[in-house]
View 1 (cartoon, rainbow, N blue to C red):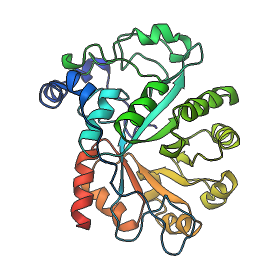
View 2: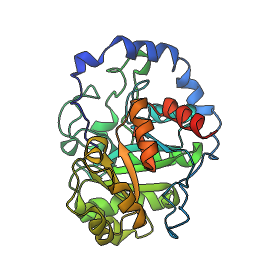
View 3: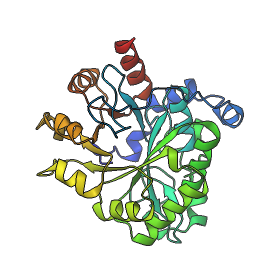
View 4: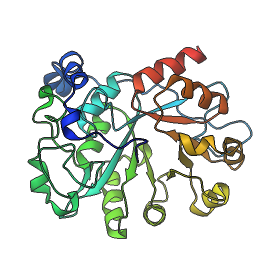
Length: 306
């Protein structure tokens, strides 16, 4: 999803905090990542409110917010990588948000930007690079030396990792995709037997329509940086399970949460890292929060409901 602020240049990303995180959080992960036991999946799943019968994505009154780890744990590990997902899991996250885009030869990869420049040692649009070229890129050294050799994962690799080690995926179809490209994503999900652990979201309405046609079993979320004129009507038209809106946009019409809930549509908010906003959104009744600080949000939310 789009950032509230533009990403820093690569030179600024080689910052001290990244080096400290690499030394303190991930020293030893290169070996432990392979053998660590899967985390428990007992964290609360959004439950239907008593007034809405068929909405498993809405949290029950008094339940904690659903914590969604934005690109894994990007404050402690290079975003959209398997090691970033692992750090988020170890911090207690069940839901991980990542972005998917195709290579030149049609293989879905986990990457946020339209180019590989910011988060790898390569250059160029992802759609101009073959899977062989993408597999050769270093996606970790830019963040900290401890992550040298980290790769850009394929969607298949991420799904296999989640299936084997635990976790669920909020998967953003990044940008405009053709029906064939969405079909490839759907086939990857089904081949990994992960349809019950993947939630698809996108800013692109045609991509959501393709996903619904090809895989009606997958729940859908519409991403929005500004509010639609009638989100409830649009949610019904697209058969949405959730309306996933920016914090700034929701602040312009907070009563929308109640309107969407009355229609059986969950509300997840992105990308929120400040405790003051967590408190406000919790009080507003939103169902989930996408954050760069999943461990902190999980602890904060659990503490408020214990």
